[in-house]
Image 1 (spheres, helix red, strand yellow):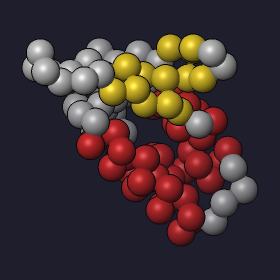
Image 2 (tube, rainbow, N blue to C red):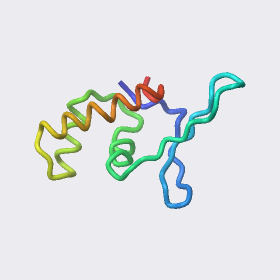
Image 3 (cartoon, rainbow, N blue to C red):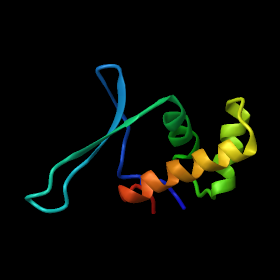
Image 4 (tube, rainbow, N blue to C red):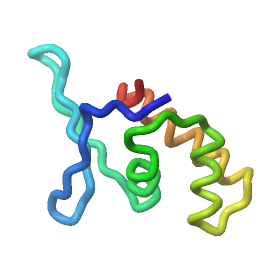
Length: 88
């Protein structure tokens, strides 16, 4: 999988966000706010193909977490990106 390059992180009022425009005229814009670990993963994986084990490895290298916690967090992060069509 790969982060869709059409989405960019913007720094607004001390928050890192991605704006997702509605697809149809009646759709609302969605704002996704990133916490520190989400932004770290986004920046680390931007522009390259990756698999879930890459996300797990990044989390374990950066944070003091066990493999089960890293796996759970990686899966959750990927699901959120998929739900918002932010992955290719």
